[in-house]
Image (cartoon, rainbow, N blue to C red; front, top):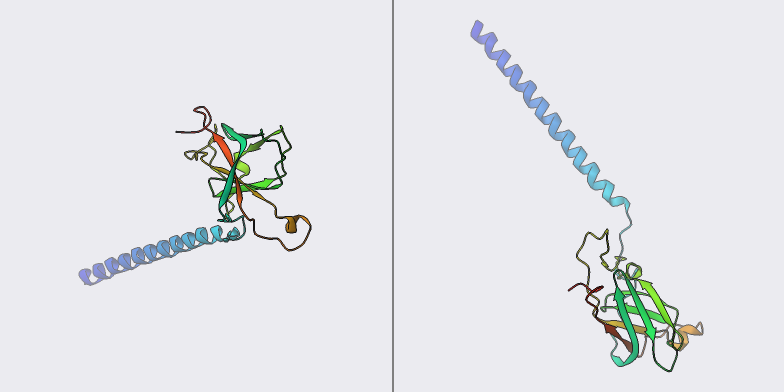
Length: 174
């Protein structure tokens, strides 16, 4: 009789242990699912939410100098004509609005203000930068078409205007 009661005690212990393990597995699964759902609260960026590179040819390169210093760029218009308003493109991927620039004027821009079509900012680096900074290789100006400036339907740009990037060893990572 002792063995029969001892066997039932062992079976009861096994069932209790199995029930505890099953409960722990269910709770862990619920916690994992809850953590996964917490990530769904952010609105996902779709292609088209941000600016898309126009892909039109660059007809000319203007004598407008772009110099990088750390996380900022400086644009200096050394031409004899004003630059039109439009959109500045960095490396054919990141863009920001551009208000135009008069003859002999300069402007300063934070590289973190340049975003891609997904809303991600240019990896400019800096003191608190956790990613390897992107290099500044190419800067182009997409002028606003005359139809878009007058309030009519926006027209695709006929061409891009290239700007001269001056490479400095201080601000542009190797």
